Image (cartoon, rainbow, N blue to C red; front, side):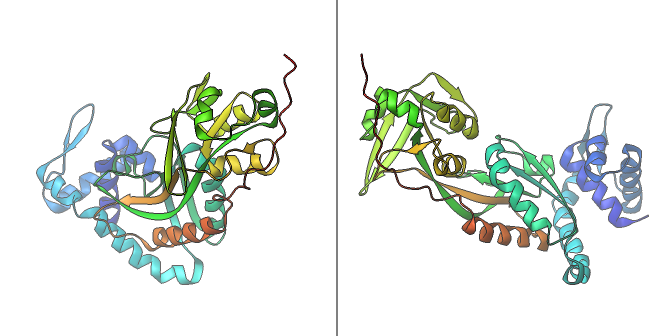
Length: 313
């Protein structure tokens, strides 16, 4: 038997919980995945899974092996890859998770720039606003916004982005220009429910913190959708720079509250604890950190003067 294929099939099955999901992850048939695992069990002389009609579960021997096998496979693939990577670039597949809006606006393009350097590399990008379970979902690397409190993962900070309050010229003409964060409680606000406290907007000036509890007609779990609602004149948005910068640059939104800074959120690369990180993942993380420092994620022009239209009422 091919011991490497057997270990790959075993790891994929243990991580996904089924031969079918493992087969989809590996790009082979369900029958072949089961055959590889059975051959590995015969080779080792132990049963690695308890099989039922609905799922498979690890035996004690299987649990011992899964604790070490992923790291061993990473080291083996890393070693074999070194033979060809210096000459041809990286190969294989990297499975990546990222938040939806951040993934669409930035990660998608960044991965394209990275992949252009490595023609034999395949990228499997999965966009979701929930935190993926890296082990069970077979994710090699996740890009995450905010702080992670999970002990099973390692985190490397890549950068950070600010949060702004912004509104359309039409909204400001009709409702007036807020001069101070506390003015926001008299305005219509658009709440991004992906934020942990969607209605709690924080601003800082000269080391002092101002917290405003806001309300509004629109609640949406997408920074991009919140931005578009604000650009259409439906209220004030408090959103991440990467989602608002283009609309601010082209004048559809105006950044508010000169002199005040919103919350700053870290952007991190996250991967499983206790595993040797393959060279291609290390290279991708380094590339993302450098690429992010050049991208327009961090800065929007400072608020400028706005002349609201006077009400005729």
